[in-house]
Length: 512
Ligand code: XIL
Image (cartoon, rainbow, N blue to C red):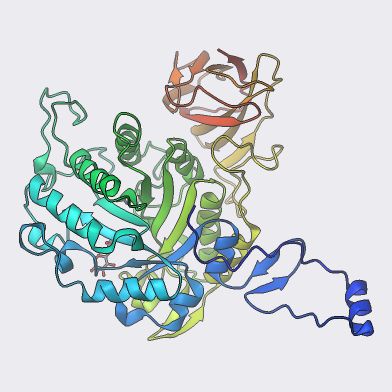
């Protein structure tokens, strides 16, 4: 992974008081520990967001414009997104040309000087589309090529497609341009058949081709909001997230392999589809299990979600979100959508990490919470194939829990048949999400089947990363095409959502 900003992993800085006294008394050494690190415990504690994030192998970034490039940006953030200056409304010229890039260049240059990565935001979007609005796929393709080549590898991640999906949890695509370029040839309700046209597929295909032909390392992402949780307020399924999952699954796997990353915008507020749910981590994990990177790309947290408290209440919400990302190895970065509350696109929500303006900023409680959480590091090993570092505790427990929904887990069953399985449960009144971790024994396995018996009255409403044999009683889950192979001692995860209660399920795993 590309992390520019790490000042180095200063481990093992623990020196006992006695040792220091001896060293100092003997005049043998002058011990200085200066920012951004101070020594506590085994690992150094970083004193900036970017340094703390880099130690945990992720980036922590910010959206900005040239007017906001005060010194805090390079100091606190390791990644930069142009809040508006790379949108087609600003830089798209006639026929897919790129123009007027002065502000965008300023941002890219600032990032380079300050050793930050840049997210390109965004190419194909119904809003702020400027002269691309209503364009044909061929004009979009010209634009995609021009804009990718304009900055090349100076951009680590590009949002190729933004906000393709409809509001209000319909699970549908939007119906305005560029969706008018979609054609469902056989009328089966999707755009995934070979004879269908799909501007998402076609735009990513073009971007992939340019990246490959030009030898770029830029990652190609799809980005949207209200896709953060598996469920929405009240526990209903998040259909928008499921629709995004289907798109990413289709176009990140063979034969396409177009999509590298998915951005969960993470504008959290009290809209029923925009709250912070306890299954945030499980949802990040299911995208990660497709093999793509996940980033929280536009994070802000409305103070309405903490009863207008921008102190500890909001800080706890930030902790929860940052922890969910940290606990998934392929969650590779978090970007906040602005520096300070008063300069935010949604100033009234007071949803960011600083107050103040014009380069004079004060840290909020949320800032300290994020820094602290980043400093605790990840609590998982790389990839969905790694077991949690402490397998006796659930991988998903947020450090601040709102007690309902509750989280519980059972230990893996005995790995006699080549694999074992353990279940982690996120429950609420009337429903649950189960995350099942399948771990291979001493030998690699080429397929698996997990059986478990649901408690009476419980029903499976959907499953991901597995095929499912039934919806109640004893259910067999088998691997899908891309997760049957598990190396010795490694793990993969699948999940399902159910109604009723899920407590007391004991999975057994059989290797194929
Ligand atoms: C917003 C900017 O923050 C505002 O300044 C602008 O007026 C409108 O766009 N989703 C996105 C971002 O992908 O591009 C949006 O940014 C916020 C929602």
